[in-house]
Length: 167
Image (cartoon, rainbow, N blue to C red; front, top):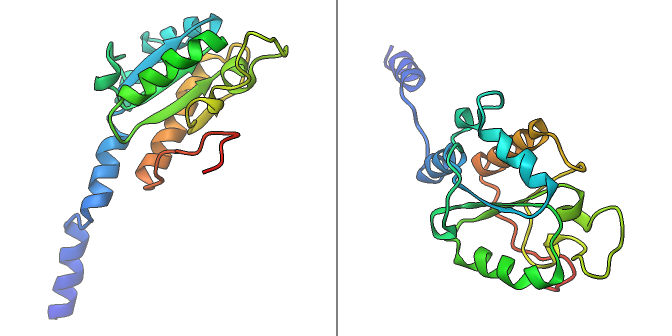
């Protein structure tokens, strides 16, 4: 009798750990900062419109300061001269922080190997999610944000390994 009451009580109570509660809160309230440099930025801006409604995922307000953001969306090609400002913006973000590389240029330098373009932002900052395409559709970016939220809610820590740099 008493065991049955305990089982019924467990079904009605939400039992969890602090870590799981924090991961749930972080996953449902991502605050993005944008680093839009090319045509991908136009597609990125459209995710806040009514058609795509990123607000339903808790990421509706693009932050104007990296100190207020926990997600950096890098969209477009990054020139070698922009590598230092990108790293500075990344370093200003508070922990934990995540990065989405949006588009072929941000992920791998684009379709052409240009001497002036960085061959992937993961040489400068650690990237958690790559969104492919040239430019990727807003739906693809929304899918990337959803995948990142799943990683956060599962307790996967942010990526800290930069490609080409030994840890």
